[in-house]
Length: 299
Ligand SMILES: [Fe+2]
Image 1 (cartoon, protein in one colour):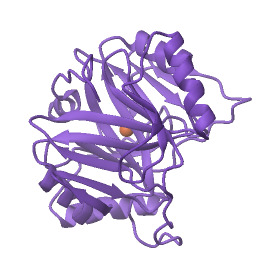
Image 2: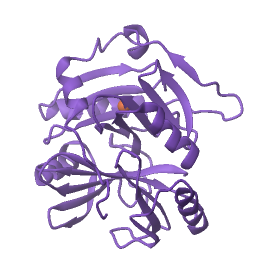
Image 3: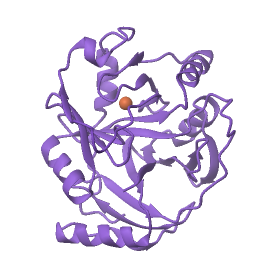
Image 4: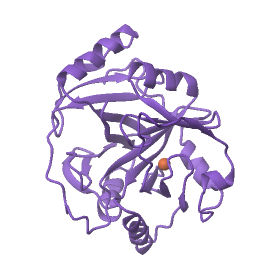
């Protein structure tokens, strides 16, 4: 896997959420369908967020890019050896942006897509004047078994663990970014939050300012986390799902990086001391509702 490409969210408020992510959050719609929307950032990805109307909030899928068809097919064989059958592919993907890929459910039923040959787009505002997200930074996932989740994503999908936050959170990378996903030990499987990368701390702050202009204040932040050293400011979208602006995530040098375990102290989760501890409200939103996922159901 080369990078985190996109995430798809199911929500009963897909229309309102699409308006929020385009008018307030800064993404650009690239395609709309029946109760669905695809939105891009300023990077080259065809889209980074997909929204689908559904009865309840849920993770639709997480999409990772891989190098080429050979890597997709190799992943399919490795998954088969682990007893994980594809829900779709390997083959041509019939969806906006196209591509060649593979879909499967992870051990907790999360739908994962690996794709290559997806249409690239011309980067928007290459000089980066507008304070809008460039790409997805990371997705944090609540898990009922953090060790099993880490084992699958490292041993079967080839991700590496960058750091632990005690035995409660694990940060996993697939390139030099400190983490593309993180697992959070929780009572049930669900989406914790989705983070979008701003190209600089100036854009990060100006993004927070734009949300303030739209009467949306951070649920938590701004601040800077210990693990990953990235800035954070968390908000709620119209469906109550948590979205984050972040910037300046640690860049991992593979040959010198040492995986550490961070203690969960206020000083380490909020290095600047500006954010304070997360409120019960933000914790409740990050816990979300139990997500049954795709166990045994066709994609
Ligand atoms: Fe985050």
